[in-house]
Image 1 (cartoon, one colour):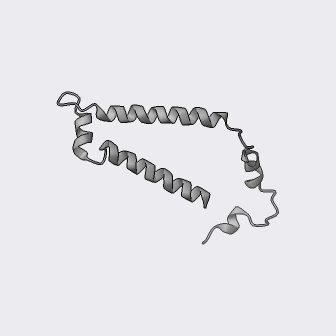
Image 2 (tube, rainbow, N blue to C red):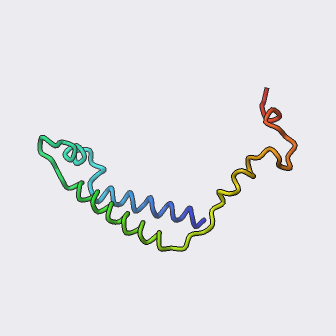
Image 3 (cartoon, rainbow, N blue to C red):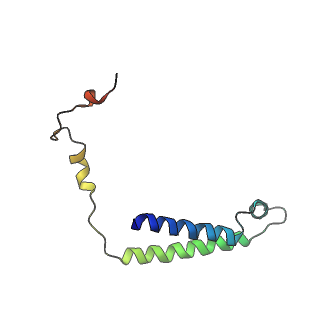
Length: 94
């Protein structure tokens, strides 16, 4: 439930950021991509702001204690010496 709530809040913050920055308006995005016409640099500031927020969050998350990974369990999960007697050929539907 906590992961679902975190995902929802993250999506809402992202959508709010897109709306505030004007990236939901096609004319704003086209103006940013039109380098040789009337170029609108305002979305560049939005990108710089996003990079700054990411940098701070990344540095903060690196200082947090890490939990042991379960990657060492992958060979056990996919090994054929498990307790199940079913083989790959048993699972194929003819």
